[in-house]
Length: 106
Image 1 (cartoon, one colour):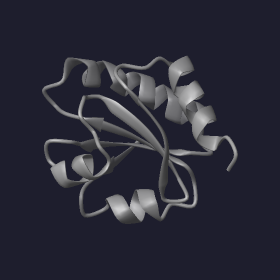
Image 2 (image 1 turned 135 degrees about the vertical axis):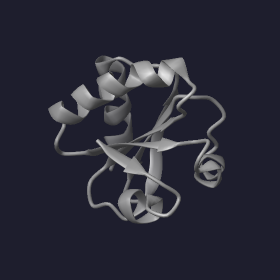
Image 3 (image 1 turned 30 degrees about the vertical axis):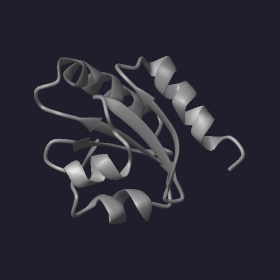
Image 4 (image 1 turned 120 degrees about the vertical axis):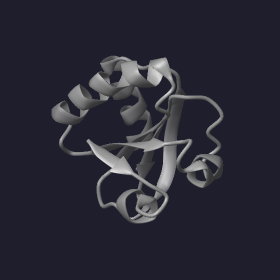
């Protein structure tokens, strides 16, 4: 799993040739900590996409730019555009559904 920052976000996420699932998280957030192993498993099962985390507290400009108001917020970016998002702790099935929504009508 990747770690994104304000400095790397545009290159690693918006310029990615693969779809990218971004977890907006924070170190103080218990559901965010619970989301991490689910994301790691999802990333292992889906090598066709990039999966990573950005600390919303350390990168508030990115979080604000993408309308993040609750943590965790997960957004799938395809060809540099946010295509689907969901708030709150997600299961593998929830992440699969999010990815499917993002890839519809590509």
